[in-house]
Image 1 (cartoon, rainbow, N blue to C red):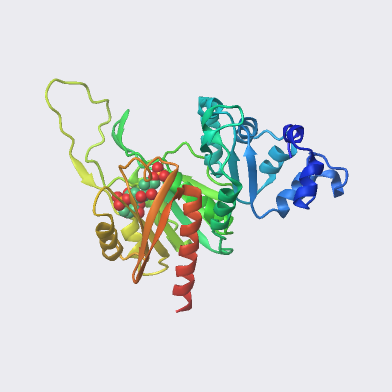
Image 2 (image 1 turned 90 degrees about the vertical axis):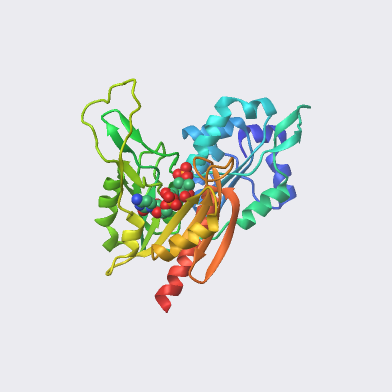
Length: 364
Ligand code: PMT
């Protein structure tokens, strides 16, 4: 409990009702070495902060650790959920929304809040999800397989294909899906190589980041490292075409129509999957605006992949930039739908599926 929580309900009431000890002090003299937050962080399989106030969320997003709850969050290496609860105006305030986004980028998973009448008498978003809903979300949490000793290379984000020294062709990928996969894979104990185009994201601790800009740089970075990898996941939105000429000086404005010739880039995913020796288990993505399943299954076969994760793009929810996504995953004799959820949660489900299929392949 935070000091503010103990103003509402005493720790003794909580203890009596739950039948469990209540911790509320950052430095606990009852604990060996008086560092209760470290031993609690090590003990927990999952950390759930409910209700999460605007103040606690702000502290989490900025790395403050001046009470037990915020210190516990900073020390925790397990999955973290928050169930926000606050006045509707506080929830809508841009500072809170920025803090929420920052927490999500740190891997925190959001439960709620819901819309409805609030303790302050107002109506709007900010009501904490019902405890039953919170429990249901936790039960859905995919327990991660053990990928200790496995090396996984993941591509993420967009590529930038230069037109001249100041302009480039790119796409809407934020890198969120690829970075969520990197986090889930490191959480499962794998050694992760993250080959990333330009994003605003922080790679998970324990992963190795190889920053690239163009499709050609991503190709070189990936192909130089495939031999050391057990799994390759192509989550990046790699440009299919690049300007045929990269003009050394800024293209000047002119009245006449101008055209740009484009040439094909090399298909990284297809080349990894075609490797004759030391070929990693190869997982592609398919981003489609129409005929999702047909195109995905075609890519699975044509590129010789072990698995493909298909997602809709260009829609209001899911795909590029969004915090959430849904996937239809195909392999040669099967398929599974992973329902719309936050990318962190989805990534854990996909990593579990990859581990299962990798295991099946290695035991055949
Ligand atoms: O980054 P976010 O904002 O979180 O968005 C996530 C995402 C939509 C980018 C992600 O989920 C996704 O779908 N990534 C693949 C995007 C893509 O380029 O799809 P595609 O259908 O055009 O390509 C098929 C596959 O070939 C992909 O695995 C791609 O990485 C790979 N490819 C494509 C071209 C190329 N030259 N080399 C490749 O390796």
